[in-house]
Structure formats: structure tokens, C-alpha cells
Length: 258
Ligand code: DAK
Image 1 (spheres, rainbow, N blue to C red):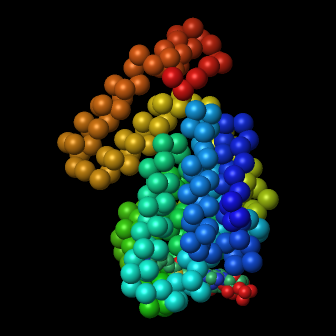
Image 2: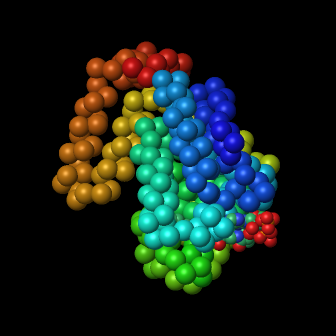
Image 3: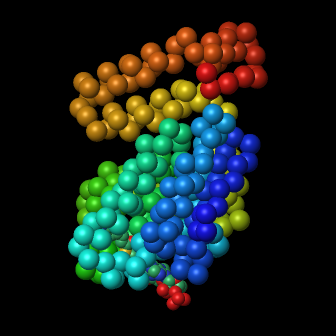
């Protein structure tokens, strides 16, 4: 992969978008590499992912404007589908994905972070949906996920005005969960990922599924989804181990993802 790196530290996978010359902007090759990185995640061994950008300036400065500027309608649609499929894959990826937003998260960059389960950022991060200033709508789910994550009114304000916001405002409107210095960001992301990885993997995966799928339906259907995923945890090794450890007053737990 030319534009994406993938490393594993313990039970945590780290995907880094690595196209610093263009502030990690997403062209077709970057999207292909991101998809390939996801293909490479060993779901038996890895229990949480971190997604970040290389350098200290930018997470992802958007979809590649140079590449997009020359697209025909059909090519634009195909580029949109490619991005949407990958972002949806991240959103529904079996294990949690934390976006460690280390700078600009504009357009497709903001959208990429929103396809992750959790967003934390550095204090120099800048979020925004500049698309209407470029003559297009936000794609890659921008009009859909932003209004589901923050308030509808604030999402409309950000999208219609195309005004960028800084980290402190992103925190205030709940777009991110926490803000760190640049030096603290990756250690904080790794600590959070390790905390997730220490829990029973099947239970964590089922929580992700229950929250994501439950939010798309009414409460009567949502609690049925929850019941099924709850029931699914029983008779697993890890359910017996987690409850056994409590009953035996044992601190160490050996979760084996089975
Ligand atoms: N695309 C391509 N290259 C980019 C880029 C981008 N989005 N952002 C930055 N670069 C490149 C610059 O062209 C420059 O390259 P060189 O000139 O050095 O070759 C290099 O990165 C450094 O950028 P600057 O020199 O501009 O650096 P500054 O610090 O001065 O400014 C900046 C940083 C982030 C404020 C500025 O670069 C900027 O405004 N960049 C554009 C941000 C932006 O507008 N992003 C949104 C792009 S639109 C859809 C699907 C997806 C989308 C839409 C629809 N469908 C499915 C319908 C997504 C749209 C977008 O993301």
C-alpha cells in the first residue's frame, strides 16, 4: 500500500492515511489502500482499530479536489460509491474504530471521522464541511452522519455556511469526545483502544451492532435487536469467564473471543 500504513500493537490495529504532500486528501488510490488495510485486519487477533493521519497538520483534508475537478457525472457517482462503500464498511466493521483526528478533518476527512465509532482530536484539529463552497453537496455520508451525531440545527449550520470549527467547538457540540495535545493524542487513543480490547470481544462487537442497528429502527424493534445480541453472548467461553471471574472474586480475566 502506497498511501496507507497498517501496524498492530498488541490487540490494537493502527491505520494511518499517509499522503502528507496533499494533507492526506482522499483520491481513488488512497481509498483503495484504505480498503486493502481493512482487508488485512485479522479479526481473530485485533480487537479495536485506530484511524489517524500522518504528520501533525492533517487527519484528512478532504476528498482530492484535483481528482474530483475533472470527473464526469458517471465518474463522480462511481467515486462517491467507492468512498461510501468503504466508509460504510468502517461504520459496520465488526470491531470498534477510534478516529484520532490529528489536524484538518475537512469534507471527506470530517466524513471519514464520522464513520468511526468514536472521535478524539488534537487541539489543532479543524473540522468542517466546505463542499457547498466548491459547488457540491457533502458526499461520503456528510449530510447524513453529521445530523445524526450532533444536533440537526448545528449540522445544517456547519453544512450551509461551510464554516470550519476548531477543536474546542467540536468538543462543545459533541462532534468529538475529548481534545488532547498533539503529543497526547495517540497515547490517549491507544489507551482507549486497549481498554476496549481488554473486554470480552463478542460482547463489545454485539454492543456496536446493537447501537448501530438499533438507531435505525423504532424502539420496539430496537429492543428486539438488543435481546438477540444479548442472548448471543450466552454459552460463550467469555460470558462464562467474565461472570466466573466476578463470582470467584478474581481480577484477571482470560477473554479468548469465543
Ligand atoms: N485535495 C487535494 N489536494 C489538497 C487538498 C484536497 N482536499 N487539501 C490540501 N491539498 C493539497 C494542496 O493543494 C497543497 O498541494 P501543493 O500545492 O503543495 O501541491 C498541499 O495539500 C498543502 O495544502 P495548502 O498549501 O493549501 O496548505 P495550507 O496549510 O495553506 O491550507 C487547508 C490547508 C486544509 C486549509 C487547505 O489546503 C484547504 O483548504 N484544502 C481544501 C480543503 C477542502 O476544501 N476540503 C474538502 C474537499 S471536498 C461526494 C463524495 C465526497 C465528497 C463530496 C461528494 N459524493 C459521493 C457526492 C467530498 C468532498 C470533499 O471532501
